[in-house]
Image (cartoon, rainbow, N blue to C red):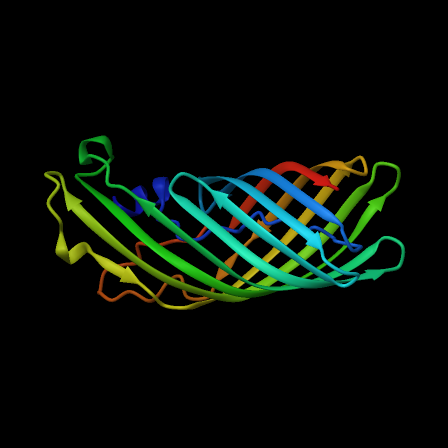
Length: 239
């Protein structure tokens, strides 16, 4: 029954982020991206609102800031970087940054679930990372952008999980924590189409954590998961 409950609601402590791949190509280039995203492990379980702002400070130096929120989760990152134009439309970018986030769930009444118990979890994490993007901007008269980004870093969590019986009493033997660092691999594909200044954006992201199955301080089975896939849609503005 616990497995069924986890599949239906999940203890998702990370989801692939819908961070913009801006394709900055000149000094003063400003990009603002806003989107809605849905993340999934087995069933869709996380919805977030995402915003990214990116800026070209010089003819090679860039930077971006991102934040998203989903009611029971949040994430933000700051990343300076560099860019290199490749011909008329090609672009290579590299960023190094730090992300911080958290996830939580408050216990519902056991009578409202499919089991005779309920649970909660809460925690935070940090993600130092590097990312390389390659793409092509303003292709054809429809100003199409195509981009691939590959993010790699360390996922550094601190989470705790607790279970309660139908009367709301804590079950000590069903509590555990998760603090094992993981290697994070997170590729992303982006498609944009529109005008020179306003474009519709579709984004698909995938994330893999190397040690999501381990790291508990007790002998209980794994209570935590990470979402594997995120699909987002939104609007991208250029200034």
